[in-house]
Amino acid sequence: MSPVELAERTEAVIVLTESAAAKIKGLMAEEPEGEATVLRVAVQGGGCSGFEYALGFDRAAQEGDLELESHGVTVVVDPFSAPYLRGAEVDFLETIQEAGFKISNPNATAACGCGHSFQVAEGEAPEDTGAGCGSGCSH
Image (cartoon, rainbow, N blue to C red; front, side, top):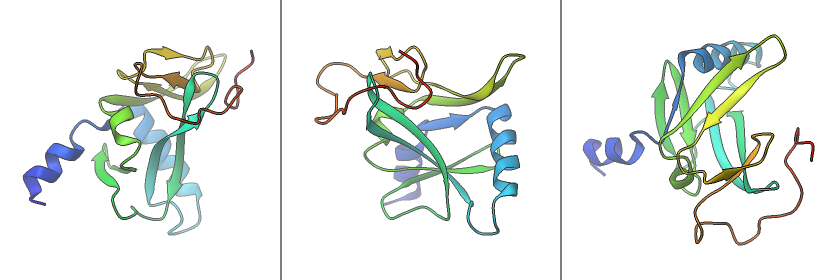
C-alpha cells in the first residue's frame, strides 16, 4: 500500500481534542513502562443502543489496525471499528459535577442516555447486539 493510500485510509478515522490528548498522555505516564504506548479505540456489539465504545491502552498496533497520531498520541483502530468511527472526535470534559471522555460520532443515529452506547443507520447494526446497557448507564 502506498503512503498516499494509507493516509487516505486513516485520515479522519478519529481525532482527539487537545484536552483529550493531554489527559491520555497523563494516564499513559502512570502505566508501567511499555504497557501503554498507544490508545486503542474500538466499537463492540452491546449496550442498550447496539454498539459500545471501548477506549484502552495497548502496547502496540496489531496487524490490520489503522494507526494515526493526534496531538502527540498514537491512536489505533481495528478494521471492524473504523467504519463506525470515521469522523469521530474524542474529547475530555471536566465540569464541577463530573469528568470523562466524550465521543462525538457523526455515524451514530441514536445513543443511550448515558452516552456509552449508540446505533447506526439501519442495515449497519451488528448481528449480535447483546442486551442491557453499557457500564455507567442507569435506565
